[in-house]
Length: 434
Image (cartoon, rainbow, N blue to C red; front, side, top):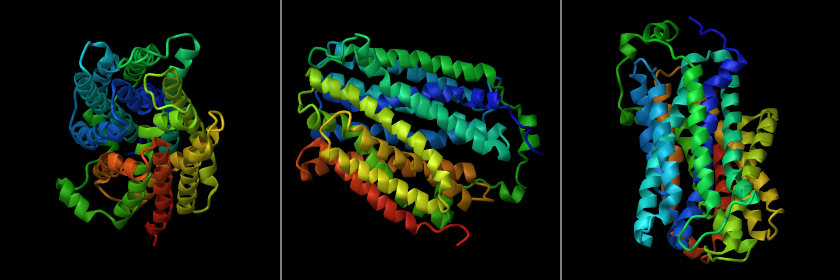
Protein backbone atom coordinates (compact mmCIF):
# COMPACT_ATOMS: atom_id res chain seq x y z
CA UNK A 1 0.00 0.00 0.00
CA UNK A 2 1.29 3.46 -0.96
CA UNK A 3 1.99 6.00 1.78
CA UNK A 4 -0.31 9.05 1.55
CA UNK A 5 1.07 12.32 0.18
CA UNK A 6 2.23 14.88 2.74
CA UNK A 7 1.82 18.62 2.44
CA UNK A 8 4.93 20.79 2.23
CA UNK A 9 4.16 22.03 5.73
CA UNK A 10 4.07 18.48 7.07
CA UNK A 11 7.45 17.76 5.51
CA UNK A 12 8.90 20.90 7.10
CA UNK A 13 7.44 19.87 10.47
CA UNK A 14 9.05 16.46 10.06
CA UNK A 15 12.56 17.90 9.73
CA UNK A 16 12.31 21.23 11.57
CA UNK A 17 14.16 19.89 14.60
CA UNK A 18 17.09 19.19 12.27
CA UNK A 19 17.60 22.97 12.10
CA UNK A 20 18.35 23.08 15.83
CA UNK A 21 20.52 19.94 15.77
CA UNK A 22 22.58 21.41 12.94
CA UNK A 23 23.16 24.64 14.88
CA UNK A 24 24.70 22.50 17.63
CA UNK A 25 26.81 20.60 15.10
CA UNK A 26 27.99 23.84 13.44
CA UNK A 27 29.00 25.33 16.79
CA UNK A 28 30.99 22.19 17.51
CA UNK A 29 32.66 22.12 14.06
CA UNK A 30 33.67 25.79 14.05
CA UNK A 31 34.72 26.18 17.69
CA UNK A 32 36.18 22.96 19.08
CA UNK A 33 39.74 23.63 17.87
CA UNK A 34 39.42 27.23 19.06
CA UNK A 35 38.25 26.09 22.51
CA UNK A 36 41.03 23.54 23.01
CA UNK A 37 43.69 25.89 21.61
CA UNK A 38 42.49 28.57 24.05
CA UNK A 39 42.66 26.04 26.90
CA UNK A 40 46.31 25.46 26.01
CA UNK A 41 46.46 22.62 23.47
CA UNK A 42 49.59 22.47 21.30
CA UNK A 43 48.88 22.84 17.53
CA UNK A 44 50.81 19.61 16.88
CA UNK A 45 48.40 17.65 19.10
CA UNK A 46 45.26 19.59 18.15
CA UNK A 47 44.04 16.93 15.72
CA UNK A 48 43.91 14.30 18.48
CA UNK A 49 40.95 16.11 20.04
CA UNK A 50 39.03 15.34 16.83
CA UNK A 51 39.28 11.57 17.21
CA UNK A 52 36.26 11.35 19.53
CA UNK A 53 33.54 12.97 17.35
CA UNK A 54 33.82 10.58 14.35
CA UNK A 55 34.47 7.62 16.64
CA UNK A 56 31.21 8.28 18.49
CA UNK A 57 29.37 8.78 15.20
CA UNK A 58 30.65 5.44 13.90
CA UNK A 59 29.37 3.69 17.03
CA UNK A 60 26.16 5.58 17.73
CA UNK A 61 24.46 5.96 14.35
CA UNK A 62 24.31 2.26 13.40
CA UNK A 63 23.14 1.41 16.95
CA UNK A 64 20.40 4.05 16.97
CA UNK A 65 19.24 2.80 13.58
CA UNK A 66 19.15 -0.82 14.74
CA UNK A 67 17.54 -0.12 18.12
CA UNK A 68 14.93 2.30 16.81
CA UNK A 69 13.82 -0.27 14.21
CA UNK A 70 12.67 -2.40 17.16
CA UNK A 71 11.32 0.39 19.40
CA UNK A 72 7.56 0.85 19.64
CA UNK A 73 6.24 2.89 22.59
CA UNK A 74 3.75 5.64 23.38
CA UNK A 75 6.32 8.34 22.51
CA UNK A 76 6.91 6.87 19.07
CA UNK A 77 9.52 4.79 17.32
CA UNK A 78 12.31 7.25 16.49
CA UNK A 79 11.36 10.18 18.73
CA UNK A 80 12.54 8.66 22.05
CA UNK A 81 16.12 8.69 20.70
CA UNK A 82 15.61 12.21 19.39
CA UNK A 83 14.48 13.46 22.81
CA UNK A 84 17.25 11.68 24.71
CA UNK A 85 19.95 12.96 22.33
CA UNK A 86 18.62 16.52 22.48
CA UNK A 87 18.45 16.60 26.30
CA UNK A 88 22.05 15.41 26.69
CA UNK A 89 23.25 17.80 23.95
CA UNK A 90 21.65 20.78 25.72
CA UNK A 91 23.29 19.97 29.05
CA UNK A 92 26.70 19.52 27.42
CA UNK A 93 26.36 22.74 25.37
CA UNK A 94 26.03 24.61 28.66
CA UNK A 95 29.04 22.89 30.26
CA UNK A 96 31.56 22.54 27.41
CA UNK A 97 32.39 26.23 26.77
CA UNK A 98 32.90 26.70 30.52
CA UNK A 99 35.78 24.19 30.64
CA UNK A 100 38.23 27.01 31.32
CA UNK A 101 36.08 28.70 33.98
CA UNK A 102 35.97 25.93 36.59
CA UNK A 103 39.28 26.72 38.33
CA UNK A 104 40.80 23.51 36.97
CA UNK A 105 44.41 22.97 35.93
CA UNK A 106 45.15 23.10 32.19
CA UNK A 107 45.32 19.30 32.02
CA UNK A 108 42.10 18.86 34.03
CA UNK A 109 40.29 21.51 31.96
CA UNK A 110 41.22 19.77 28.73
CA UNK A 111 40.22 16.38 30.15
CA UNK A 112 36.86 17.81 31.20
CA UNK A 113 36.48 19.37 27.75
CA UNK A 114 37.25 16.02 26.10
CA UNK A 115 34.56 14.23 28.11
CA UNK A 116 32.07 16.97 27.24
CA UNK A 117 33.04 16.76 23.56
CA UNK A 118 32.50 12.99 23.58
CA UNK A 119 29.04 13.43 25.14
CA UNK A 120 28.16 16.29 22.78
CA UNK A 121 28.99 14.34 19.65
CA UNK A 122 27.26 11.22 20.95
CA UNK A 123 24.10 13.17 21.69
CA UNK A 124 24.16 15.09 18.39
CA UNK A 125 24.48 11.83 16.47
CA UNK A 126 21.65 10.33 18.51
CA UNK A 127 19.42 13.34 17.80
CA UNK A 128 20.35 13.58 14.11
CA UNK A 129 19.71 10.01 12.98
CA UNK A 130 15.95 9.88 13.82
CA UNK A 131 15.16 12.72 11.39
CA UNK A 132 16.61 10.76 8.46
CA UNK A 133 14.74 7.64 9.53
CA UNK A 134 11.37 9.36 10.05
CA UNK A 135 11.47 10.55 6.44
CA UNK A 136 12.01 6.94 5.38
CA UNK A 137 9.11 5.82 7.60
CA UNK A 138 6.37 8.27 6.60
CA UNK A 139 7.23 9.80 3.19
CA UNK A 140 6.33 7.96 -0.01
CA UNK A 141 8.85 7.33 -2.78
CA UNK A 142 7.53 10.16 -5.01
CA UNK A 143 8.01 12.77 -2.26
CA UNK A 144 11.28 11.56 -0.73
CA UNK A 145 13.43 13.77 -2.96
CA UNK A 146 11.44 16.84 -1.85
CA UNK A 147 11.51 15.76 1.81
CA UNK A 148 15.29 15.27 1.81
CA UNK A 149 15.73 18.57 -0.05
CA UNK A 150 13.79 20.31 2.74
CA UNK A 151 15.99 18.54 5.29
CA UNK A 152 19.09 19.68 3.39
CA UNK A 153 17.79 23.26 3.32
CA UNK A 154 17.16 23.23 7.08
CA UNK A 155 20.57 21.62 7.60
CA UNK A 156 22.36 24.41 5.69
CA UNK A 157 20.25 27.10 7.38
CA UNK A 158 21.14 25.72 10.81
CA UNK A 159 24.81 25.63 9.84
CA UNK A 160 24.72 29.28 8.77
CA UNK A 161 23.21 30.36 12.08
CA UNK A 162 25.58 28.27 14.19
CA UNK A 163 28.68 29.39 12.30
CA UNK A 164 27.80 33.09 12.59
CA UNK A 165 26.74 33.21 16.25
CA UNK A 166 30.17 34.16 17.76
CA UNK A 167 30.70 36.84 15.10
CA UNK A 168 27.21 38.30 15.66
CA UNK A 169 27.60 38.34 19.46
CA UNK A 170 30.94 40.10 19.14
CA UNK A 171 29.38 42.62 16.75
CA UNK A 172 26.65 43.52 19.29
CA UNK A 173 29.25 44.13 21.99
CA UNK A 174 29.77 40.84 23.83
CA UNK A 175 33.43 40.31 24.72
CA UNK A 176 35.46 38.23 22.30
CA UNK A 177 38.54 38.05 24.55
CA UNK A 178 39.06 36.45 27.94
CA UNK A 179 41.87 35.79 30.43
CA UNK A 180 44.37 33.19 29.31
CA UNK A 181 42.93 29.69 29.43
CA UNK A 182 39.30 30.88 29.46
CA UNK A 183 36.76 30.88 26.62
CA UNK A 184 35.40 34.29 25.50
CA UNK A 185 31.81 35.16 26.35
CA UNK A 186 30.96 35.43 22.63
CA UNK A 187 31.57 31.68 22.30
CA UNK A 188 29.93 30.75 25.62
CA UNK A 189 26.73 32.67 24.80
CA UNK A 190 26.68 31.12 21.32
CA UNK A 191 26.48 27.67 22.88
CA UNK A 192 23.81 28.81 25.36
CA UNK A 193 21.57 30.26 22.65
CA UNK A 194 22.23 27.26 20.39
CA UNK A 195 21.08 24.94 23.19
CA UNK A 196 17.86 26.94 23.66
CA UNK A 197 17.08 26.85 19.92
CA UNK A 198 17.83 23.12 19.80
CA UNK A 199 15.27 22.21 22.44
CA UNK A 200 12.61 24.48 20.92
CA UNK A 201 13.10 22.98 17.45
CA UNK A 202 13.07 19.40 18.69
CA UNK A 203 9.90 20.02 20.72
CA UNK A 204 8.30 21.62 17.66
CA UNK A 205 8.88 18.48 15.60
CA UNK A 206 7.90 16.28 18.55
CA UNK A 207 4.54 17.99 19.02
CA UNK A 208 3.73 18.31 15.31
CA UNK A 209 4.73 14.86 14.04
CA UNK A 210 2.87 11.71 14.99
CA UNK A 211 4.68 8.48 14.26
CA UNK A 212 2.72 5.47 13.05
CA UNK A 213 1.54 2.72 15.36
CA UNK A 214 2.98 -0.74 14.57
CA UNK A 215 -0.22 -1.89 12.85
CA UNK A 216 -0.39 1.19 10.65
CA UNK A 217 3.32 0.97 9.84
CA UNK A 218 2.90 -2.68 8.80
CA UNK A 219 0.21 -1.69 6.28
CA UNK A 220 2.61 0.56 4.37
CA UNK A 221 5.83 -1.38 5.02
CA UNK A 222 5.03 -5.08 4.65
CA UNK A 223 7.68 -7.38 6.10
CA UNK A 224 9.72 -9.39 3.61
CA UNK A 225 9.07 -13.11 3.22
CA UNK A 226 10.34 -15.32 6.03
CA UNK A 227 13.16 -16.58 3.89
CA UNK A 228 14.35 -13.00 3.53
CA UNK A 229 13.84 -12.01 7.16
CA UNK A 230 16.91 -13.80 8.43
CA UNK A 231 18.95 -11.27 10.35
CA UNK A 232 22.49 -10.81 9.10
CA UNK A 233 25.39 -9.51 11.11
CA UNK A 234 27.31 -6.43 10.10
CA UNK A 235 30.35 -8.48 9.08
CA UNK A 236 28.31 -10.69 6.74
CA UNK A 237 26.64 -7.64 5.21
CA UNK A 238 30.04 -6.11 4.53
CA UNK A 239 31.25 -9.33 2.89
CA UNK A 240 28.16 -9.29 0.63
CA UNK A 241 28.30 -5.52 -0.05
CA UNK A 242 28.23 -4.49 -3.71
CA UNK A 243 31.53 -3.30 -5.19
CA UNK A 244 30.16 0.26 -5.36
CA UNK A 245 29.97 0.35 -1.54
CA UNK A 246 33.77 0.05 -1.34
CA UNK A 247 34.47 2.19 -4.42
CA UNK A 248 32.41 5.08 -3.09
CA UNK A 249 34.04 4.46 0.29
CA UNK A 250 37.45 5.14 -1.30
CA UNK A 251 36.25 8.55 -2.50
CA UNK A 252 34.74 9.18 0.93
CA UNK A 253 38.10 8.44 2.53
CA UNK A 254 39.86 11.28 0.72
CA UNK A 255 36.93 13.70 1.17
CA UNK A 256 36.41 13.29 4.90
CA UNK A 257 40.16 13.16 5.54
CA UNK A 258 40.28 16.63 3.93
CA UNK A 259 37.34 18.16 5.79
CA UNK A 260 38.58 16.99 9.18
CA UNK A 261 41.63 19.18 8.57
CA UNK A 262 39.42 22.10 7.55
CA UNK A 263 37.49 21.92 10.84
CA UNK A 264 40.68 21.34 12.77
CA UNK A 265 43.10 23.90 11.33
CA UNK A 266 41.11 26.75 9.76
CA UNK A 267 41.13 28.95 12.87
CA UNK A 268 44.90 28.59 13.33
CA UNK A 269 45.56 28.86 9.60
CA UNK A 270 43.50 32.04 9.21
CA UNK A 271 45.15 33.50 12.32
CA UNK A 272 48.58 32.81 10.77
CA UNK A 273 47.81 33.92 7.23
CA UNK A 274 45.48 36.90 7.78
CA UNK A 275 46.08 38.16 11.35
CA UNK A 276 49.76 37.09 11.51
CA UNK A 277 49.47 35.61 15.01
CA UNK A 278 49.80 32.28 16.77
CA UNK A 279 49.06 33.68 20.26
CA UNK A 280 45.79 31.98 21.25
CA UNK A 281 45.17 34.48 24.08
CA UNK A 282 45.36 37.50 21.75
CA UNK A 283 42.41 39.51 20.46
CA UNK A 284 43.63 38.84 16.90
CA UNK A 285 43.50 35.07 17.37
CA UNK A 286 39.96 35.28 18.78
CA UNK A 287 38.99 37.53 15.85
CA UNK A 288 40.31 34.80 13.54
CA UNK A 289 38.15 32.33 15.47
CA UNK A 290 35.06 34.43 14.79
CA UNK A 291 36.04 34.82 11.14
CA UNK A 292 36.33 31.04 10.81
CA UNK A 293 32.61 30.86 11.57
CA UNK A 294 31.95 33.45 8.86
CA UNK A 295 34.07 31.49 6.37
CA UNK A 296 32.23 28.27 7.19
CA UNK A 297 28.97 30.17 6.62
CA UNK A 298 30.29 31.30 3.22
CA UNK A 299 31.10 27.67 2.49
CA UNK A 300 27.49 26.73 3.36
CA UNK A 301 26.19 29.41 0.97
CA UNK A 302 28.51 28.12 -1.75
CA UNK A 303 27.17 24.62 -1.08
CA UNK A 304 23.55 25.77 -1.45
CA UNK A 305 24.29 27.58 -4.73
CA UNK A 306 26.31 24.71 -6.18
CA UNK A 307 23.60 22.21 -5.22
CA UNK A 308 21.37 24.03 -7.75
CA UNK A 309 23.99 23.48 -10.45
CA UNK A 310 24.64 19.78 -9.80
CA UNK A 311 21.40 18.50 -11.44
CA UNK A 312 22.42 20.21 -14.69
CA UNK A 313 25.31 17.78 -15.20
CA UNK A 314 24.40 14.89 -17.49
CA UNK A 315 26.62 12.41 -15.67
CA UNK A 316 26.51 12.05 -11.88
CA UNK A 317 30.15 11.00 -11.66
CA UNK A 318 31.24 14.03 -13.69
CA UNK A 319 29.34 16.31 -11.33
CA UNK A 320 30.91 14.55 -8.33
CA UNK A 321 34.48 14.76 -9.68
CA UNK A 322 34.27 18.39 -10.86
CA UNK A 323 32.84 19.44 -7.49
CA UNK A 324 35.70 17.81 -5.59
CA UNK A 325 38.26 19.41 -7.92
CA UNK A 326 36.77 22.85 -7.25
CA UNK A 327 36.82 22.15 -3.51
CA UNK A 328 40.45 21.04 -3.71
CA UNK A 329 41.36 24.23 -5.59
CA UNK A 330 39.66 26.26 -2.85
CA UNK A 331 41.70 24.59 -0.12
CA UNK A 332 44.98 25.21 -1.96
CA UNK A 333 44.07 28.87 -2.61
CA UNK A 334 43.79 29.55 1.14
CA UNK A 335 47.60 29.42 1.31
CA UNK A 336 47.90 32.39 -1.06
CA UNK A 337 45.19 34.61 0.44
CA UNK A 338 46.09 37.13 3.18
CA UNK A 339 42.94 39.26 3.20
CA UNK A 340 39.99 38.22 5.33
CA UNK A 341 37.40 39.13 2.69
CA UNK A 342 39.27 37.53 -0.21
CA UNK A 343 39.11 34.31 1.84
CA UNK A 344 35.47 34.18 0.74
CA UNK A 345 36.60 32.98 -2.72
CA UNK A 346 38.34 29.76 -1.65
CA UNK A 347 35.58 28.92 0.82
CA UNK A 348 32.89 29.36 -1.84
CA UNK A 349 34.84 26.81 -3.91
CA UNK A 350 35.16 24.51 -0.90
CA UNK A 351 31.36 24.69 -0.67
CA UNK A 352 31.15 23.09 -4.15
CA UNK A 353 32.96 20.02 -2.85
CA UNK A 354 30.79 19.94 0.26
CA UNK A 355 27.57 20.06 -1.79
CA UNK A 356 28.61 16.97 -3.74
CA UNK A 357 29.71 15.13 -0.60
CA UNK A 358 26.28 15.59 0.98
CA UNK A 359 24.35 14.08 -1.90
CA UNK A 360 26.35 12.18 -4.52
CA UNK A 361 27.66 9.27 -2.40
CA UNK A 362 24.18 8.41 -1.13
CA UNK A 363 22.61 8.70 -4.59
CA UNK A 364 25.24 6.38 -6.09
CA UNK A 365 25.02 3.93 -3.19
CA UNK A 366 21.22 3.68 -3.04
CA UNK A 367 21.21 3.06 -6.79
CA UNK A 368 23.67 0.21 -6.26
CA UNK A 369 21.56 -1.16 -3.39
CA UNK A 370 18.25 -0.94 -5.25
CA UNK A 371 16.17 -4.01 -4.38
CA UNK A 372 18.21 -4.87 -1.27
CA UNK A 373 16.34 -5.79 1.93
CA UNK A 374 19.24 -4.43 3.99
CA UNK A 375 19.22 -0.82 2.76
CA UNK A 376 18.97 0.65 6.29
CA UNK A 377 21.76 -1.50 7.66
CA UNK A 378 24.01 -0.65 4.72
CA UNK A 379 23.36 3.08 5.16
CA UNK A 380 24.28 2.75 8.84
CA UNK A 381 27.47 0.91 7.92
CA UNK A 382 28.19 3.47 5.20
CA UNK A 383 28.47 6.07 7.97
CA UNK A 384 31.79 4.38 8.81
CA UNK A 385 33.16 5.69 5.49
CA UNK A 386 32.54 9.17 6.93
CA UNK A 387 33.86 8.52 10.44
CA UNK A 388 36.86 6.23 9.88
CA UNK A 389 38.75 8.63 7.55
CA UNK A 390 38.36 11.40 10.15
CA UNK A 391 39.79 9.17 12.88
CA UNK A 392 42.78 8.28 10.70
CA UNK A 393 43.28 11.94 9.74
CA UNK A 394 43.15 12.96 13.40
CA UNK A 395 45.72 10.33 14.37
CA UNK A 396 48.04 11.42 11.55
CA UNK A 397 47.59 15.17 12.04
CA UNK A 398 50.53 15.65 14.39
CA UNK A 399 52.91 13.84 12.03
CA UNK A 400 51.68 15.57 8.87
CA UNK A 401 51.85 19.09 10.33
CA UNK A 402 55.51 18.49 11.19
CA UNK A 403 56.20 17.25 7.66
CA UNK A 404 54.70 20.40 6.11
CA UNK A 405 56.64 22.82 8.28
CA UNK A 406 54.48 23.19 11.37
CA UNK A 407 52.11 25.82 9.93
CA UNK A 408 48.38 25.19 10.14
CA UNK A 409 47.59 26.85 6.80
CA UNK A 410 49.63 24.12 5.09
CA UNK A 411 47.21 21.56 6.50
CA UNK A 412 44.52 23.14 4.32
CA UNK A 413 46.79 22.59 1.31
CA UNK A 414 47.05 18.92 2.37
CA UNK A 415 43.23 18.90 2.46
CA UNK A 416 43.17 20.25 -1.09
CA UNK A 417 45.46 17.50 -2.34
CA UNK A 418 43.19 14.92 -0.70
CA UNK A 419 40.13 16.29 -2.50
CA UNK A 420 41.95 16.14 -5.85
CA UNK A 421 42.76 12.48 -5.14
CA UNK A 422 39.09 11.96 -4.29
CA UNK A 423 38.07 13.53 -7.60
CA UNK A 424 40.28 11.03 -9.43
CA UNK A 425 38.91 8.12 -7.36
CA UNK A 426 35.35 8.94 -8.49
CA UNK A 427 36.11 7.25 -11.81
CA UNK A 428 36.83 3.97 -10.03
CA UNK A 429 33.11 3.76 -9.15
CA UNK A 430 31.14 1.44 -11.42
CA UNK A 431 27.51 2.34 -12.00
CA UNK A 432 24.98 -0.44 -11.38
CA UNK A 433 24.09 -0.40 -15.06
CA UNK A 434 27.71 -1.23 -15.88
